[in-house]
Image 1: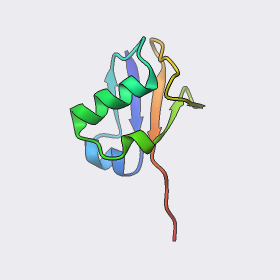
Image 2: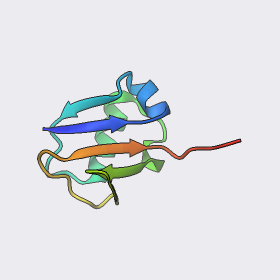
Image 3: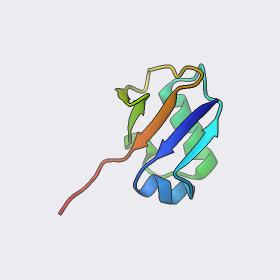
Length: 77
């Protein structure tokens, strides 16, 4: 089982700060596709991803027990 964390507008779109699902063995890109379809997430493909608090690429594979965070780009003003 994996804990998936959402930040900023992604948290609002999902309606939860985090969810728990099993995505072990999948790449970050595969998880992004899965979550975008399941929660109708906009712009998830442009979000930065962290696995266990370290930035990860779309090709990185998620292991059992990993915590995955999706952090969208932030615009300031």
